Amino acid sequence: MNRSELTRFVKDSALSLGFSKIGIAKAETITEEASRLRTWLARGYQADMHWMEQSVEKRENPRLVLDGLKSVVSVALNYYSPAVHSSAPGTGKISRYAWGDDYHLILPDRLESLLARIRERVPGVNAKVYVDTGPVMEKVWAVRAGVGWLGKHTNVITREYGSWVFLAEILLDVELEYDSPIGDFCGSCRACIDACPTDAIVAPYVLDASKCISYLTIEHRGRLPDELTPSFGRWVFGCDICQDVCPWNRFQQETAELSFHPRPGNAAPDLTGLTQMSPEQFADRFRRSPVKRAKREGLARNARAALESQASLPSS
Image 1 (cartoon, rainbow, N blue to C red):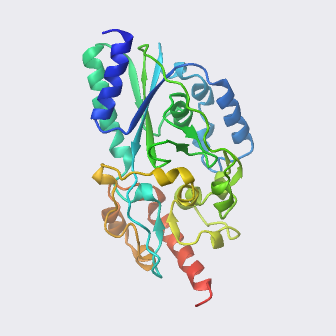
Image 2 (image 1 turned 90 degrees about the horizontal axis):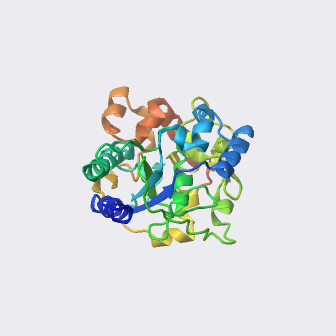
Image 3 (image 1 turned 180 degrees about the vertical axis):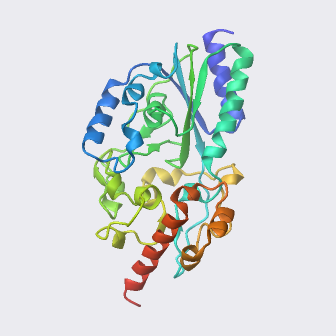
């Protein structure tokens, strides 16, 4: 099987396994992107996510991650569900990506299936699989592989599915045919920047995590910042505001992956109920869910903040 045939086989296999998009980039040092990462870190925009400060040299040069690395296979999986958030008083909002099962539990098996197919054709191939883990700049490789472009909100946007996609990679020591970036189609649009209620998008393509509702409701531990919580609205886990206003997301398509559709109550969680869950109730309700990332204490904290925000609104 020559390089062209193998490339076609890899792409056809990925799509047959249910991935929404696939692109392949040549593995090389990504000096410009790594320089921007170092500047971002130096400004403290990673907040308390100190793990992002580790292994920057590996993020810059992926060949330090896998000996003989030649190709980075970037895949995207559409997770959009057409359900809508409730506007009923006393309900909160969970980010759309977390309505169903945790993608960290779904994508790895699918990637391993793709890798198994590749190994049938290329026995002995050296490879590594990554799903939002390890020293791999997944957004950079998705852009380089032509899967999409980096939006001003710092999410990767695809033509076909907007930004409602999960990203993952396979690193291979096999040379394939490579795709080209598709360009930036954000143009002069500032919808995401202007819509962010906490001004977390400090410049196009630059996000200050310490101001981001998603970071603060998921990763942040301890007290929420008093100066920002009035802007949180009803968000208790994550935030979709910058994606909801993106014009490219009008091309959204419903995912075929049923496990990403909302579980009962996740599109309209009862805020008071979230504050009163026992550890056992939390573990049971959010088993295999991304919401576990916030921990019970964090989710209850967020729900209390949302209740206080609603209570402070003038009655109509």
